[in-house]
Length: 281
Image 1 (cartoon, rainbow, N blue to C red):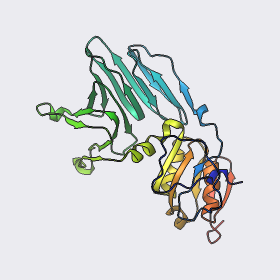
Image 2: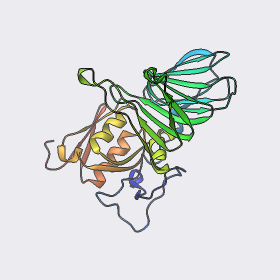
Image 3: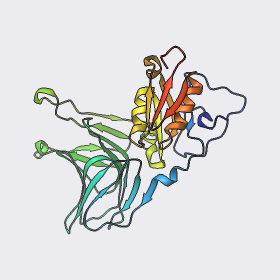
């Protein structure tokens, strides 16, 4: 059985429906083709918890591997990815959510009397109605992706200028402090709907890759599980990976990798070890 590598994902793959995986008919997955729907029939729905509506003031967190949908009092929702922390503050004049760390997807309903604002770092993202993702991980640049609607971005230094307007299918990498007090340049770009779908695959409990290295893929799985993937062969660690996998099944992902790249996989406690024949055991 090869449920972990059941359906190849070509360059025109549309992951939006996230239908159940089906086995290929009369075809063989090549070494550098897309890997597949990972984890077989893993029940990713168990990762997602639905919270009760939060009060006008409050903090919300998720643990490793937990995805939580939080309805807000105005009908908006926030979907928190793994290891995420936010703070909510609603009053009569505004609705404010601060992303302290992690990744969150905001679906905002219109309230003519109270604008909706997301604060992340020293930046302010405001909208009347939109759906967008904000990610703030460790020392990485802050990453904003607009799914639907329009989001305006401002910072304290832009108080006297017009905010940057982000339309649907736009990604913005925010500047962050660099070495020596310098800043890295911001970069906004239009992206395809396929790119948006891959970036938001975590909402369905999945991780999507499009040419990332195996080492990068292993790091992505580490966000969702205490089980770590260790790659003993440097050449194997550089292999590109394309496919859609269950975020809570690093073992299934590793088995798919082993089949496609002629590697060996074994597990010792919370560590999954991938090697090739030429690598040291």
